[in-house]
Length: 241
Image (cartoon, rainbow, N blue to C red):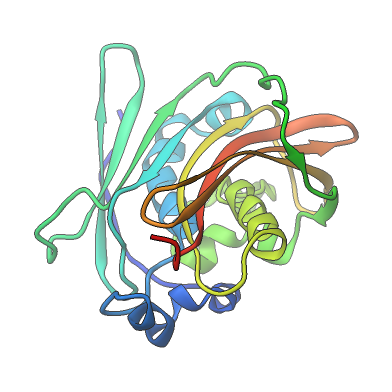
């Protein structure tokens, strides 16, 4: 059974490219202070799962991440897991100083199944990433996730997959502040430091709800075989009512 874990939330240096992760940018968008990147909140919520299920989850597991309310930089966040009868684990991000909780929820499964079929939509240009530095095993350690498996075995942190999807959104769809709202992440193989991956992204839906949103299907492949697949949603334009 996964165990609770507590962490001091922080933003990483690369996230200042999105103004919402700075105090000034967050206040301009109507928030009291900097929002922690959703991908970092996801990294925190994977900690109890990986501590319990280990590399099996990193190889073939996955889950759905939903962001319900902002996680603010500098706050203490409790990651509280519960199990259901089907074997899934739900991990909630709790900020005891806020009246509304959970701030975010990860529902994780030990087997996420095969890669889904790619849906039709607006295909973005393919990209290639080297899994090191900001997209490598060290993501968790920089964010405050202290599990040893990543540094010891050079296993890429699971938060790298939505981080890559976020980079596609950041550089291909938006200007100014934007917010990552939801991801379904499926793992299909372990990746290690220095691997090269090709990323294929398709915008499969656009709609307005508290801003202009985009939904992307993202395939991250190594040597032609998927390592991870995502359904990734973000508010790409906060000015749209």
